[in-house]
Image 1 (cartoon, rainbow, N blue to C red):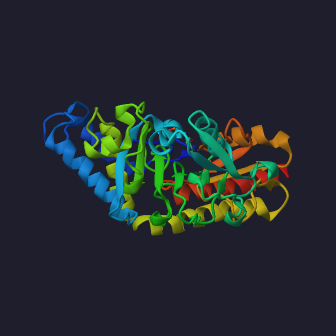
Image 2: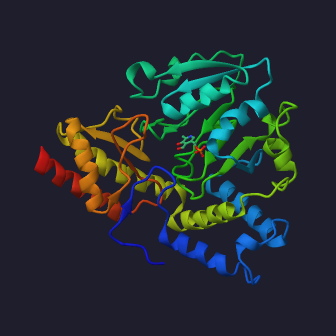
Image 3: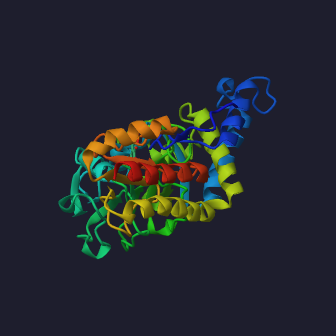
Length: 363
Ligand SMILES: Cc1ncc(COP(=O)(O)O)c(C=O)c1O
């Protein structure tokens, strides 16, 4: 596949994918598994696709060491749909959910959750401009909370939890959209993890959820059948037509992740790459990062130029160097370099050298 080798994509999602994954995906469009037709034309009820779903579920369980009492399910509607589907499936109408507010996406989850039941902010970093994750010991974890929702990596704010929080017996529900499969996770700390796959795994619209079995079976009667976690699990994700091509892309990405050495190896690479950029930001006063050290994201490096008039010029000059999509989220502004799993060391080196040269010329 020809792709300009001098273009580096730092988009926050959909995001860059490994060329070899795109190559394999392309081959499936001509003839999938020797069927004589493309995956896009294959029946979802066929043995081939059923085997693909089983394999992909198995790969997710293996790469994250998911214990047997958790189920993996593929859902549709993107991660935002889960902001409603989590309460519909897991929160009885009279129960209370807790939310930790750490930035744009957790605030969106909270706003939507409020439409379905009592939703309390148990901790918030709004007061300090979302520059950190409130320490777990400061969370107002009332024992009556039915669950507590977190967003471990805030894509728009560049804030990331320093580890997997321990909430004791309160089930922790995590929107891991922008960090899924980028690091090892202590799954047993969570009641449910969900992630839109358009960051580290490729396709938009598809959500992977990992759910502890004892939380299933509480869906409200009005929950649409296709969005009922338990029913989709029981019927092996075939209540309706699954996002077949998306699931295939996830399978290819999981093959690729395995070849890279698994999530441990990727985590090490993600730390190394992000440190290379944070080091330049911290070197002097030209750039700044709004997040305190220790809580900075290794997936989405959010930063800015102290002199705001430099920002547009930075983006324009970066583009001429092939460094694309470095603008920050529309709600937060500034600059952002997304360094998901498929981001290459060459891209990070090119960005680092551009930042140094930009600072030299405009500082
Ligand atoms: C952490 C997080 N949650 C949710 C979403 C929304 O995802 P979707 O567009 O799939 O609904 C995003 C999108 O960037 C995100 O980063």
